[in-house]
Figure 1 (cartoon, one colour):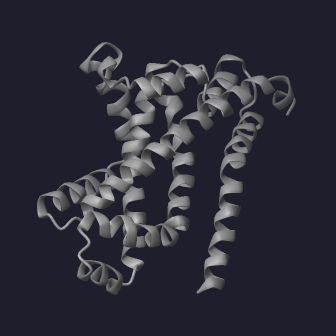
Figure 2 (tube, rainbow, N blue to C red):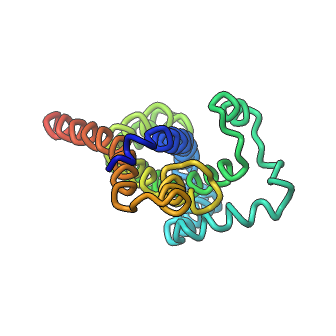
Length: 235
């Protein structure tokens, strides 16, 4: 177990890189998932079809396949897929000290995959809003966008907090795949480095990696339990 102390810097570096991509992926998935959810409940049939197709595609596709296409398909479209660079994100990456092309590819894969589940969590919250609320808003002359902004979405977010939290926890655990698709230095790749390259025993290294993921997921799970209990009391 001395590896946990002797190579603490390696574990800490892996934890920090994994935390970076999880935070950025969570933000991206929440934004994209909200947009897809709006498409799913849109009164325009073609838009509903687009939203439904997106959700069905990514919910029924293994994350490994999505990661594979992101890691090996996107670079084939251009040199390091430079067209995927977003100035705002590049600024964030530079401040975080991260400038890895595969970091961006892994981030794209996690966002695309998780957004489908975020969409369904939000849609379950929308379905929890009494239909009379939306009907009353329409009778007042509110447009579809105004109805969503002022009536439906503010109420649906409250009902969606716990499902969304579960989706984010699942995304954090899914991020363990990124080390196998080119992202150097995350927790899963750290395990491979310490066991294969440096010869440390697997069990202590696995315990260290597990502690890193538990630090990210357990507090979030405890927060969700508290929110769920508060909502039950309020009802």
